Length: 299
Image (cartoon, rainbow, N blue to C red; front, side, top):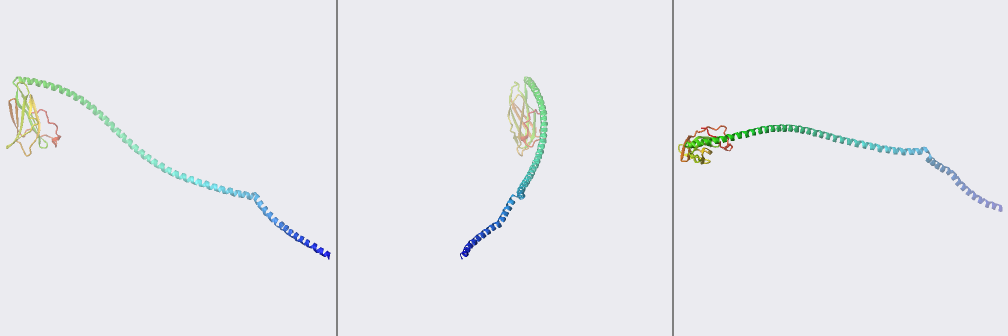
């Protein structure tokens, strides 16, 4: 009985140990069963990690991506550069074309201006040559005029000297009576007329005498006295009476009467109104007329 009990007592630890051993065995078995799987997974990971082919494939993929990125950047840069170059070229081309056209226009304008300057220079040169010729002619004419003036001055002095001699001779012979040497009346524009009388007188003593002049226009019914520029003159030889007057409106003279008084001598001279000839090429206005002609009147 004791043995049986001992056996039973022994059997119980044995069973516990068996259970423990079974448990350990299960654990060990589980570890042995799972460990190869874990080791295999770790081995695969290590193999994958340490495999040069896959590593190189990954590295090649990265390099390829980098290469593709670099190529994309390069292509983009090339396109940008090409586009910028094209746009710059076009702008430069158009700008150069515009500048070329403007330069051509400026060149044409400069050419035309140069032609004009040449023409102007030629004209000015001709004008200078003409002016030189005219100056030479003017100087020659001036010299000739001076020479003629000197000759006229000498001739005038000679004539004056001769007149003085004649006057002296005439005075010694009793003098020259008061008389009209020449007369004229000529028509002018604006119903105006120009008169001229040459009167001569020389007293016995050869001195100058006062001369009073009266000019009258007459018709059948009335007369008009002409206002003279000067009614009194100093006569010593020859006096030239000159002037102009305007005919009164509606008055038509038939005769002209000239009265002269000097040194107790009186002369009355009548002239027909037709005295004198018509003036050719008469101007339109009396203001355009030259001064009164002082040249001697031909009898």
